[in-house]
Length: 294
Ligand code: ATP
Image (cartoon, rainbow, N blue to C red):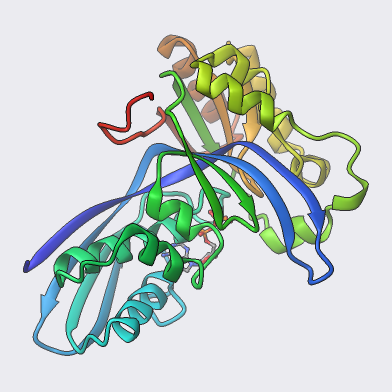
């Protein structure tokens, strides 16, 4: 293949629980991950010049070796003993440092993209095994869809897609460091935990109300205190008719789940008008065709 084009989808967390902080500093999590129809586009082209060339459009991001795209590509080349050249073009649409796994999903697209471009025949398992070396969310992004994520994020169980709905995703114009959020989370002192098991059942039953009633993210205990705009966006979404709203990952992105497009558009309009966020999407869950309910 001379050229491969791939979409790298963003994720939200329908549920995010932290079970404990391990003595080694890692947090043991229990999360429900869901891909959404917001994506970056990556184009991979073979090049006569060996090595990796990255070009980025749509965002101010470093295009050097620190970029997760380059890290993933270097890892694949090393592991597969590839001495080839590849040009990668990223068109960035996913909000950055948002709690939507933007970097991790780009890295995941690199595994798939290079696999196809160079006919490497890496299995999904092999790609996930390599992916975790780049980041805890990368194996999930390689798989996509709806999944339960446990351990530090590497233990994945595929779930059926939830019922269709309309989503509003809003990224307020603030920077929240994932490190700050986890450092300020008192994981061993949390008194309330989201009902992840109940949500798993609701997903299996195709029960949207059962899902929306159980949205929960323990990281909100840190961010909502420090960044009131998160609660303000949730309130506007609920006033506009969201079934429920939640912060995704370590934030600051907030999503609302709606059953009516009209209400979702009303929420988008108000969030923009009140200046709570400028990056606002009316979108939906993304589950690949053929992933159907079992
Ligand atoms: P997560 O949900 O996994 O915490 P995030 O959405 O909060 O991810 P990212 O958008 O992945 O955060 O970006 C975090 C940092 O990673 C950015 O500040 C950026 O400099 C760096 N980074 C490296 N490569 C990329 C990439 N391809 N896309 C976005 N950010 C990248």
